[in-house]
Length: 339
Image (cartoon, rainbow, N blue to C red; front, side, top):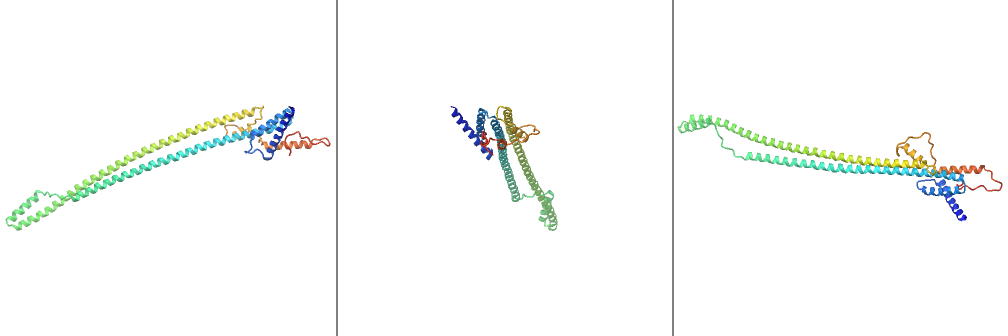
C-alpha cells in the first residue's frame, strides 16, 4: 500500500516537473490549457504537504496563484470580446435594417413621383386635345348670316327703290353709303365673334389651370402624408433599436458586475489559490468591466512564466551558496526544473 502511494506521488511529481519545465520554456500562451496545469500543480502541492515539504509547497502555491490570475484574465478578456461582438452584431443588424428601410421608402417615393408625373401628363394631354377640338370647331363653324342694323336695311331699301325708279345716280350714292356702313358693321360683327371665341378659350384655359392646380395640391398632400408616415416609422425603428441596445447594455453590465463580484470574492478567499484582484483592477482601470477606482502603488503582476524562472534563480542561488558535504551530490529535493 505504501509502495503504491509512493509510486503515485512520484508520478505526480514527475508530471508537475514536466509542467513547470513547459511553463519555463514556452510560457503560458493562449494555446496552453491552464486548468490542466492548475489541476496537476494542485495535486503536487498536496503531495508536498503530505511530505512536509512546505518550502516546495509554498513555491508551487505561488505559481498556482499566478496561473489562476492568468486564467481569470483570460476569462475577463473573453467576456469583454464576447460582449463587444454582441454590440457589434447589434450595430450591424441595425445598419442593415436602416439600409433596407431607406431603400424601401426611396422606392415608395420614387413610385409616387412617377405616378404624379403620369397623372400630370395624362391631364395635360387631355387639356391639349380639348383645346385642339375647340379650335377646330371654331374654324369649321359656318358663319351665321349677319344681322345688320335698321339703318343699313333702310339704306338698302332706298337703294332698291331708287333703282326701280331709274334714278341710278342717287341709287349709286345710297349704295356707296350702304356699302361703307355694311363694312363697318361686318368688322364689328367679326370682332364680336372673335371676342366671344377668345372668352370661351380663356374660360377653357382657366378651367385647365384650376384642374392642374387642384391635382398638384392633392399630390402635395399625398407627399406630405407619405413623408409623415416615413418619419413615424423611422422614429419607431430608432426607438426599437435604442430599446434593444439599452437592454443589451443592461444585461452586459449585470454579467460584468456579477463576474467581477465573483472574482473578487474568490480572490478574497485565502484558503484557495485564487488571485483574481489583478483581473478586476485592470478591468476597472480600463473602464471595460464596470466602475472602479485605480489603486495607487499597484505593482505589475508577473506572469506564471516569470514566477517559475524567478524561483529557478532563487533555487540555483541557494544551491550555489549551500555547503554540501565532501563527495556528496547536491540536494535534488525540489521538483522545480533546474536553470
